[in-house]
Length: 399
Image (cartoon, rainbow, N blue to C red; front, side):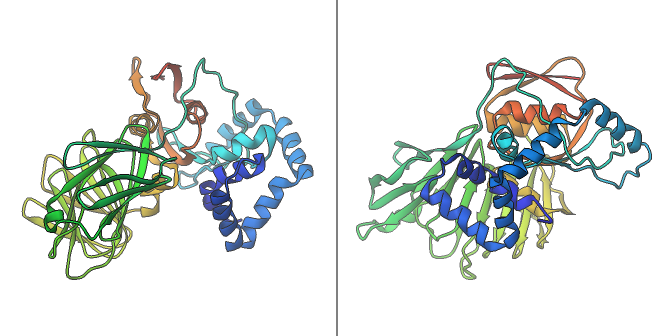
């Protein structure tokens, strides 16, 4: 296929299929993807072809990585900065099945130096003395009466009945069902869903709007919206698909910033340890409001509001990259190591420490979030700009 991006999203399902560990629900999702395009079916067929797999393995084993890298360095000096480097990972079985799940198309910028397209690259064996698994589906739901319901990706069915409501969780998605016995002031009853560090969850709001919560996030919402507006309160990061209702605007409040819509798809990044609320719009229109000032953004734009000022900055970006976390992908775009490791720390629930001088390398690329942390660190180390060590849940970064 011309673009491996979709394959990366479904790499985890492909791995489970090849290993014979795929569930009926997952197989249905994979089959739907295969039927979308002939290229998808061809890709899966190639992964099942033992002869093709052996050819790939023989080819990779024949590569002298040191000589290959030196050749890249030599040619890079002749390449303009506008050329991007893509490190494409071959998808192959058994020993290479880890590479499939790795789902990587990495292109690295180090000190903004030009780099050359690299077709294949091997992955170092795990050299760390211990490892950390990826995050999972898990959330804590705090009800208006203070009681707490803990849910994970295996929770299925009604998890709580209270105050005329049925709270239902189905494999990583929670939704509310108001019964006939629900009291009138139910729109004044607020619940809060929280995803711990290293966890994510999905929520269906009372109006049918969908919310994906990233790691270390929380959303406060009423169990029923009133007749004139729909308001929720966010900390962290969430992607919204808001049900259209021109008579009832939908507002998200995050760090003194309001994002107001009627019905649209957008992502809000508003962690307390960041310096700005960033709203990325995929479709529809959104109004950003802060301290009496407001601006509209259109699809393909991102609005940034600094926590310490009311200035609203608008940029044109690849908005799909801002929601890759929802599809279990890291997407780095010329980011420094501190920004990269901040995302890694949230997803793997680890502490990051920098020894001596913080490396100045910048990274761009797409990496699956379904891998153990060692595989992510190995890929970052391939740049030559950083080194990592793991001690329990503490990651030490050195130049």
